[in-house]
Amino acid sequence: MSGCNCEDSTCLEGYENLELKELINEIPLDNSLNEMSEILKAISDPLRLKILYLLKNGELCGCHITSALDKPQSTISHHLVILKKSKLVNWRKEGTWIHFSLANPKLIEQIEDIAGRKDELNDDNQCCCGESEEVVGEENGCGCGSFKVIDYSKTQNPQNPKNKVNDSLLKELEEKSKKLGIVSIGYSKIPQDIFNKNNTLNYSNAIVLTYPIGMDIINEIPSDKAQIFNNYLYAKFGDITYTLSDYLRKEGYETQVAHPMEGLIDLAKLGQETGLGYIGKSGLLISPELGPRLKVSAILTTIENLPFSEENSHKWIKDYCMRCNKCIKACPEKALTENNDILAKTNIDDAKCIGCSQGCTYCIEACPFFEKGYDYVKKKQTKIETKLKKIK
Ligand code: SF4
Ligand code: SF4
Image (cartoon, rainbow, N blue to C red; front, side):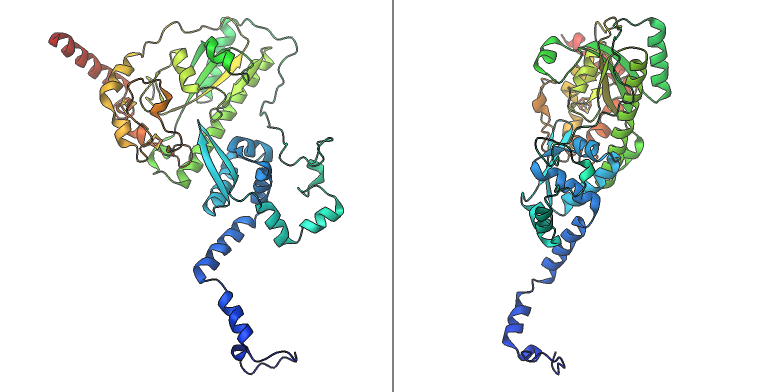
């Protein structure tokens, strides 16, 4: 800076100028500058900005963000991971859902200040989204934060729905399901106490579907990459569930989709009600086909004469779990705690579990039903029971 040639009469050459020295001292350290630069990079993407705007009025779950922006789940998840890493958003897990919120409630204001947009927006009295075609809300003005959750159904519920189904249509539904990759399909009435307590459920009869968790997820260690695979799986299985629901609607039946990633209803418990499997200590539905390597979804419907399951032939799994505990030991987050009331939700600490944020599958991998298969474990349990009887 010495030897400065500028024509500013107030310029007192660089380092000799005390004020300039003070200014230089005020520049944060490189570490802080790098951190700031990462934050600015995280903000500098239109889709990520849209996500931040959506969170402006409070917490939203990941599914709502995906629905609102009408983008693939994997895309939204990728951007949420970047916002999370930059500490711009907080997250918390509730059931199978992850909820996001702004780490700093004034973030949008600050971004608008930096971009010099705030005054401009106020002057013009425009919507804060800057996308007027999206703005509705006659009473509230700007529609930001009051978006509608998108239902992926392509067919509307029929005006005059039927409530009885014949065997050939059910057979067709089951064949269609298998072709789409569904592992098993079961039928159950939603227990009355659950139905009465949950006013988001439209119908009390359920068709429950299971879908395999791919080995690509199992083989990946918990990470953002595993989570992207996991989100893709949820999106794919969700689409299949909607396709089958649409099929029933076209045939004249009313339906409501319980998306595999949605906390509309406890799907593992519903799966158990159908007799498709039994809930293990991992909190997962253990099936004869794939052990715990499954996701569960459901189509709720008014169809009254579904072949509802009368009993569950997999109850013995509970007895095996009593002695096993391998999933508990395998959990790196100590999210599973021993509790011999298998159905007790307290077995799983949702806040600690990273299954739906990092694609963790350690409790599945450790489970003998995954490792050795259902038939092997059943034989082992029968042997144990025989021995125990002899001892008595
Ligand atoms: S998914 Fe991972 S963190 Fe969650 S309970 Fe299973 S092993 Fe633990
Ligand atoms: S690992 Fe063992 S205790 Fe856990 S669900 Fe599987 S069988 Fe049950």
